[in-house]
Image (cartoon, rainbow, N blue to C red; front, side, top):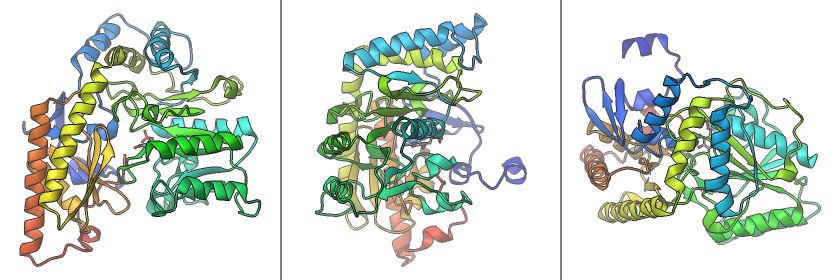
Length: 438
Ligand SMILES: Cc1ncc(COP(=O)(O)O)c(C=O)c1O
């Protein structure tokens, strides 16, 4: 690890929690340079829904490269982009009755969020955007202004303006937070300027695996529509099948004005992002928002091939079946360790186990890693273990990973108890600190 420690910036984070040099990866398994195998409950922070080096996508990619297909295309028309757009329309948009235009921003999630925020402001002529407590939308300045984490916001070094946080579903206990927002919007003295948009994750991932209720989402969408406020759904981490449907908002019966996709949209871990926008909102002037890598045609090839998974509902049903397995097992683990585990949370194959002892989730993640399982703690205090396996994971690997998780949890809790240590505050003292988000 020496070259990483001496040459690479202190900004690196995941390599501190997962101290191995990885060499290759297949399906739901990673291999380090010593040959040690790790089951992946992390999926590149949501980028590898279809597994590492998915063999079908790999063949499409290799074939395309062998044919000297265009790799870098800015926003020029290419055969690879045409094939993707046609398939996306036929396999994803049309069957769902969705009418969107497609924008290719730069290839990261935060690029998509920046584009969505700029577009919402331009289309409405308003500046203000509302977001939710614990939101994570990326770390460039616009996206950071709608991200909750205090430490991430501090790193901006400038004031983050023109945004206001709102309580998410459940944040005010008995008080319904859509009603709370209605009160703000309908009170001319609330101090909230009429916003251009509200941006929301249907399941807050980095924020602690907090799933908004489907009814809450529906009522939020209705309220915004009544006030002419745009709804931006950030489906960067929980889209592309993570919750069981291609878009996470489908079961809520909601049609957002703007949707951000990235991470698993290329299906192969290749950088790519999309912004879907209602056609009426397409007020961009040519070249008004660009990005050198917005035409990653290698990603377009694998993205088009990945849509094979969505030709019928069999993949979706299988994701939900596996989600049920994970949920039940996590509930058993939580019941068995009731003194330290909070409720299991999440939707589909993004599930979280809350550990109600400071620092314990990071300890468990470290112990799990030593035992051959990759998973990360998330949440405001890194108190939630995020279970995010590739959607294509085999049942046996899923069980094996959950077994490792339980052993690591028992060991960490046992070690803490033996040391007479409540673990409270240990997280802050770790030499190996938890990762700082994707
Ligand atoms: C919901 C959500 N939005 C945006 C982002 C930012 O994506 P990127 O790290 O590719 O900029 C992330 C990253 O984890 C995310 O989870």
